[in-house]
Image (cartoon, rainbow, N blue to C red):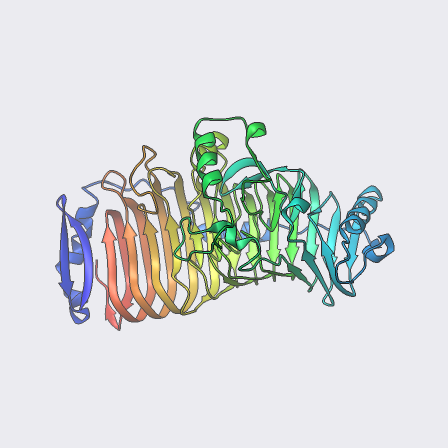
Amino acid sequence: MTEMYLEHAGRRAFIHQSLTTIAGCSAIGALGGCAHGKTAVTSPVSVDPWAQAELIRQQVRPPEFPNRTFDIRTYGALAKDGHDSSQAIAAAILACHNAGGGKVLVTGGRYLSGPVHLRSNVNLHIDESATIAFITDPKAYLPAVFTRWEGMEIMGYSPLIYAYEQTNIAVTGKGTLDGQGNRTTWWPWKGSNFSSVDWGIPGVPTQEAARNKLMQDMENNVPVAQRNYADGSYLRPTFVQPYSCKNVLIENVTITNAPFWLLNPVLCENVTIDGVKLVSHGPNSDGCDPESCKNVVIKNCLFDTGDDCIAIKSGRNADGRRINIPSENILISNCQMRSGHGGVVIGSEISGGVRNVFVENCVMSSPELERGIRIKTNSIRGGVIENFYIRNITIGEVQTAIVIDFHYEEGDAGKFTPTVRNIHINNLQCETAHKVFQVRGYKRSPIQDLQLTNCDFKKVDAVGVLEELDKFVANNVKIQGVEFKV
């Protein structure tokens, strides 16, 4: 038996239904009633939306660098236990920048470093023989820098790799970036705050008090220069964060054991993330979170994470609305997702909106993959999310295949009603799922124009939840071999 929730004629109906009767169930047809007679206002990208995806693919080009090499060993770096190569790496980056650009080479072993700050026209290249292992003493990440933390602007610990208002920057090579986060380092600061796992250690302070104060500072519009949340606040730094940069390339490296989010470009334009392996299972180990970015290509990457694999964001609550810059024109292709809270996600720090996101030719599967395609927001986060196109997705094993939920975390407790419209999913093949849908809009703001075409959910325990939709369309959609009728 499946359990399906449907909204009809202003009341909620709870229906027990056999999978063998899905094709003829008139209650599914009642989804039209969820729309309360409204006509969807959609914002199509073009007659053929995938033509815009092709434009993104063609126009987003990685930066190129002069043929100059600056070996960090020349500047005093040593692949030696306990030796801090921070100053040597910084000197090589400065020399490369001052010379007009080129490659800063990291080769020949494991180098210990504090934060790395990139400059324009510098490609930090970690070859296959090399690792940068980042110091775990928080004081190494001072002085504070201007950064975003969970979508809020602060003066906080420096990200492990950081760039601010730079042009033509890259991190490349087949080497490894190791944040050295673990159960005793960085991760305990999470505590049990908004987590199913208590990461805390008795006697070790956590982020909870500072996070709550920061939320109040944000809502009270405290100037960012006065939001001092570095030493003593226990807000873990992001691993790689280019901020307000143009022409960014992250290619082929392995990023592991992150204190917090792994890749988080913020307010960047023309970003390429290609062939990166993102493997980290700590708290909030999001793989790649483009935030308020424009023209982004994420391709050929592997995600095996403790949180969302990819989560597209645009700032949280009052800060997201104040800055009011969406993430837009994002193409995700040929990626593999393993463990994670979600495969491809929009939200939850989404107050500035998201539009024109294209996902194709991705494979997702793991017993620990909680959701495949996911949008998460609520009436505190708000935001307009539109033009989300997905095609040719293979899901092996997932807990819930498709999630669009306006009841995330705080739920319907604010005055910023979200809008979600124009979501098209074509050729999604799912082998095993506990539930197909967790789709819930608001009565006052139904999810508009959700279309599924040529989708097959082969083995499922439940159809799941469908509430408050306007213009829901399912063409050639099968659940356990039976056609799903709307």
